[in-house]
Amino acid sequence: MWGIHTLRGERRGVSVVAAWLAAVLFCCCAGASGGKGSGLEGAGTREWAGAAFGGAACTRLAPCVHVVPHSHHDPGWRQTYDRYAVDGEKIHRAVLIALEEEPSRTFVLGDVAFLTKFVTNSAPAEHVAARVEKLVAEGRLEVTGGGFVSPDEGLSPLEGLVAAYNEGRRALSDALPNAPYPKTAWQIDPFGHASSTPAVLAHLGFDSVVLNRVPVDDKRRMRREKRLLFRWGSSHNSSILAATYDRYAV
Image (cartoon, rainbow, N blue to C red; front, side, top):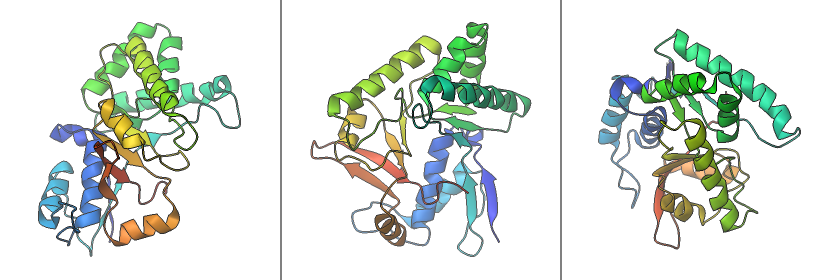
């Protein structure tokens, strides 16, 4: 038997992504005392995950499936940025309406390029910005990532990586001046992850990052060793909490 729960972190005063990180930690460590050097304890993790999800009972015989409603929209792939923005406008408008219709709904937006374009191109922009900021303040809409785009980590020079986040910060500040800057980086689609990334993210003020595109063999090993959640360190003595998607899409 599987229990399916959407994330409603606002009820406990935690963010959607923070609640999901608790779920990942639970899935990694339930029934275990934590791997060597992990600093993770199974019993405490179960209590943490239960608190984040309203006391849901998740066991090995009746595991829970935690669904994270979110969007990921490439600013440039097969079409131009402006062409993708047409679909982005539809997504953001639909999300805004859906959240306002039902107070228990939550959503994660991970693409600053499209969110800010949607807000600034709407009429009146101030009204739409206020609606978005209200949902963010209520904890039902979470902006993650922080970069104008989700930066490529394999080929981008260090200054390019930093520039992407600086531009995202500027664009968010202009479009949503009352919304806080994200604390969770959202690197779910880059083809691989660079060793310098945790140092860059920690320097920019992020406290966590969500990863996805890890080599299949490595992800299998991480799943087997219950290490999908880990401290990602760098040679610059910086580290950040990293969570790896076990299954990205259903």
